[in-house]
Length: 261
Image (cartoon, rainbow, N blue to C red; front, side):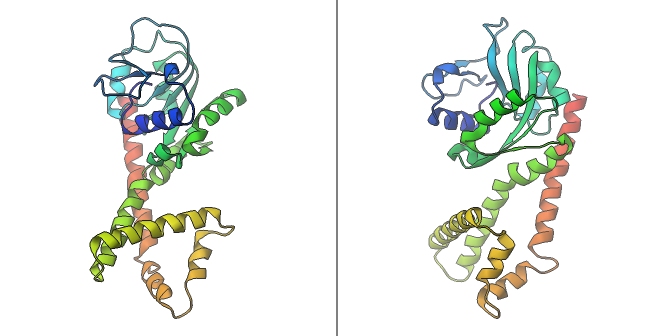
């Protein structure tokens, strides 16, 4: 693992919890931040290859990509190069390391508890490579292959950025409850429990969320009155379209910057 910050560290901890031996992992961390017991930590990528790797995972920040362009990975052999760098395309990644297969991965933060989403894309991965990467990612949550790399920025906006947007919604729901007169801490507990239960119910249902919402809303009742506000022409749907469009546009800007770097 080259880098192991918030996202890379979350993935590593989940893999270890799922049974990966720490002795199989080497982390390159210039900051030298503490890692789980048994994981080998290096401050820099070794100049000399110490053997073939099963997989090299790039988990540093996209802004740090330039540090890999001078060739520190050129002497390191790996069957798979997997990158979680937002906005950095396969064509930009391929020259960094003599790997047989390059895979882009987009995890979101709930991978830390095994309830995340991992989107994957590889331009020319064979069945065996795809199966291997999918099996590696399976303990992290839902794994989805994206056929068209051009859609990766959109998937990142939805699933990668989505937890932050949902956290904002949860905070706003709690604040709205407090504005009605509920104690703030109680409103926060009620909002989180409501979201958790509703999400579980939606995940297990045999119908979509829109149908579930209508089932809860009796004609003329209080839920319907509230939904009428969310369903207005200037309500929730256009707000989320604008939100995701802004995130996707930024992903494309970062991809363009990575190509120029």
